[in-house]
Image (tube, rainbow, N blue to C red; front, side, top):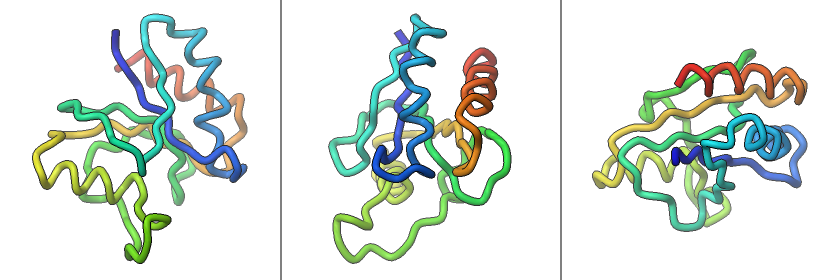
Length: 124
């Protein structure tokens, strides 16, 4: 079974779309396991991680494969230790070779996000 990790924050509306569509994606794609991902916990060590997450600054659902283009802020505490930083660290230490992030715009309608993410999952 293929695994796709779903990131987000259920307490922040703009960051919760991936989590809100997770169960419906699971119904549409029973052959794929959609697992919730918490970047501050132990990250899975797969050669190429597949992740659905909210991405700021985009206007359509897109696939991001270049970890080096992920912008991270300064790390002052564990609250600042985000997915982007974790992925860069894992790549640098050889724990992953690459990533496929299905990025959802922060202000996208939930139904549109579901449609567009579903179309990408069908392709990959």
